[in-house]
Length: 173
Length: 101
Image (cartoon, rainbow over the protein chains, first blue to last red):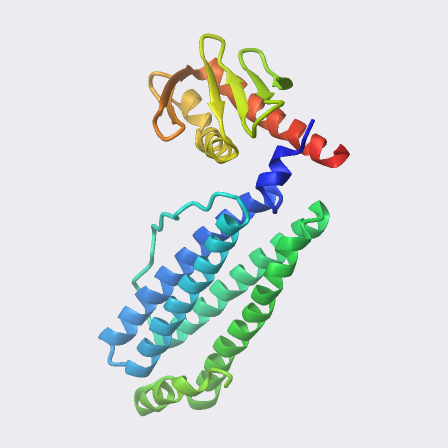
């Protein structure tokens, strides 16, 4: 019997499911960062707001990259639903801590798909995900640098304003 | 046609010529492209069987629209349980075929 699935689909069907789950996670991340940008905007933390607007856009780009990968390889990508986005935060420090937790969750999820790719011998997707493995390492480093600023400068009064102004420089050039 | 998988109520086939699959729902046979097969699999996967037993799905019925709304099916709880097995079995056979092909 000819292998119709392989003729139509270049990736493993179970990996396609995991990638669709990842699309949901990236969309969720994008929305979380948008909520954080909004909080920063309302609290006059303009540079942090800009940082999170950019983060939100990046997460959406990640989502689109996976979305196109699935469809380009013969699978079906599903447009994600996003719900339960928290808009309540106590401080900018809490926002960056939450952002780091979020990035770690995404990293773990990407690593899990890579492990599954190895198990199911889906080299196409494993190779595609290497970019994400590297990207996640950089994302974690960036947020970690922001948290180091809190340790260095504190988070009250003028220190918070000065810290906010340094946020655009935490991204690795 | 080659039989892929047979469950209590349903049977799946792969066409010898052409690139499509046939699902026999006993009273009705439908032809599916691979893309439609993936969509069917997703719809069956999304059915929450638990709701049939917690009372959330009061009537114990599921309505599935397939192949871009060309076909409509209504399944009861027993058929849904079988349908989930049927989809798993069909894809397991397809994977097995990929391994030996």
